[in-house]
Length: 169
Image (cartoon, rainbow, N blue to C red):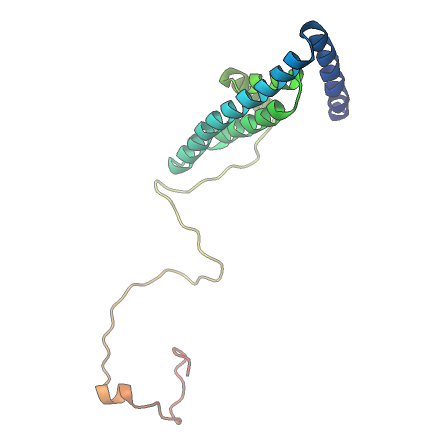
């Protein structure tokens, strides 16, 4: 229900603001402000998005919980969408989401209302490999020496010799 209200209210608010601001400063300055905020917002989203991506990478490499950096990155992405949407209300919401205190407040609100059932990362101090599907146990590293004579290696295999299962003939 609240999503329906948002889809109905946001365009009405934007139209009202366009009419008010356009009546106050004129058509071309209003359009210039909308384009300027889109360009400025794109630049800010790009720079903050790169920082958020670095924070996510750092949390993965340090084996820390990536929830908060991922949430910041998602909110920066939403801010970018809001800033590219023409309008004063969406620009204000987008610029607000670009400020870390607002993002932290949203994260704290979501933490109170969302319960994580399970979170799991590697089980030890270093990165761990999960076995691949179809893998059979540990890999054993070893050395070998070919004990057949050079003449045996050059001659073709005798057809009466049964296959060992280790090679394809």
